[in-house]
Length: 297
Image 1 (cartoon, rainbow, N blue to C red):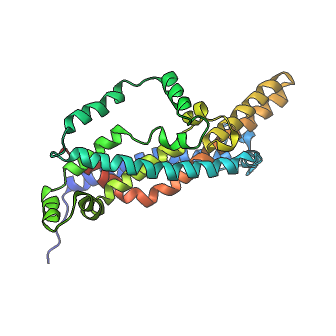
Image 2: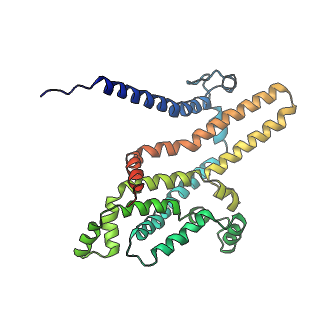
């Protein structure tokens, strides 16, 4: 068998692609490596700009100061709970809604789409929402963290577009075999939607993990605070402490501000690491799910 050789133009194009990919890889990896290195480096060397890529003057003082706060473990547990339960609720509400809206035989489909689309552009505002949450008894409860955004219209549109692109013959065949619409959804449609499920799990989990504003507004008990709010409190306290010590001499103030910067980098690592660990498990579904969901059916 004769091997087909690439032309000079093909080789130049491949080299160009590799160069672009390498540059993009550096642009993505460098900030991650730098933050990790800065979080375990001597704060004086970080402030002096000596840390470029690899850590210098190894220290875990930033992480030690963070984990001195007993609320960290509670915050981690709360965030894991909010992420797992919130993601499950998001999937249970959004995916069936997207499937139902994708069925052209559904009565009132266009009216419902319009009704759901309006709040995407015009919301009731923070104060009316707060009053409603308080009136129905969800204020300062864990339930508010997983229920207030249980339905997301943007992700529902992605699901709707994905399901609309699936062949109608699948449903027709399942109906002929005696399946009800519910059985068709769970036994035929969902097993073929692993790419969509992977993408939705990633989207919802990242959104739930990073949520802090809802907790800032609707929670007052520290034992219910998510990790992001606990870390924010630590960072604010360190900033306040550094400002208070600014009048005690330049050397003391400089050391405190350097420690604050070290804690800031450690906070970024602590809050981002679980999501970075989760991503490889759903990465194989990510590109496929997004591309299929972006095709109009």
